[in-house]
Image 1 (cartoon, helix red, strand yellow):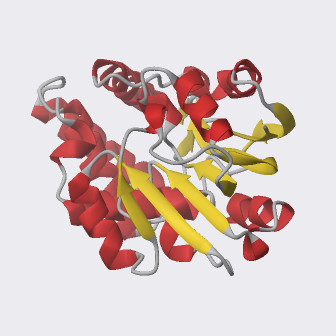
Image 2 (image 1 turned 180 degrees about the horizontal axis):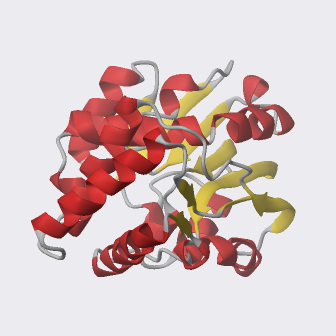
Length: 252
């Protein structure tokens, strides 16, 4: 299974934009609390195609870092004002105490050593500055309805593990911040309705991701059967899909 890397950069951006939509209210809250608008230097670690960067407004300089050059090319199209750097989140190519605000978005579940990444985010952030991780899911607490779709969530979690991700990282997030040497200001779950209706575009994006994740893992006929069931459940408003998603805000 190839997962998100098998999608075109445009489809990846659509997926990342969908995720950014989920956390829009949370970002507005946290960026207001951390005074993003007046920050002189801001860094997003794992900026992907620029889905979050594109919506940032600050009087200072906005930086984005990602390991994937193809995604950075796409990010340059969506966030032309950002300073983009290709680099490793576990060894950030920036000076110590060089940013007022450092954050990541759906990143830590994908890295092999999340504590090291958080230590690096802490290192490059000014004393008194802010470090935010938003957001990280916990598939072990996922809720699916109708019952026939529970298997779909279990397959997705298994696929993420095979891709090297930790689908249960969310509930560990506060502890990871503490291990990285930060003082926790706030750590909670993202409040999002489990049966909030998807637009047709969002549903298609979700299923492109599911099909990419489960390619070679689930028979196509079975996957298409679940796809039809899922579509009918959304249309009838019987569908419930809830994955607890955690965030944490700390200071060096």
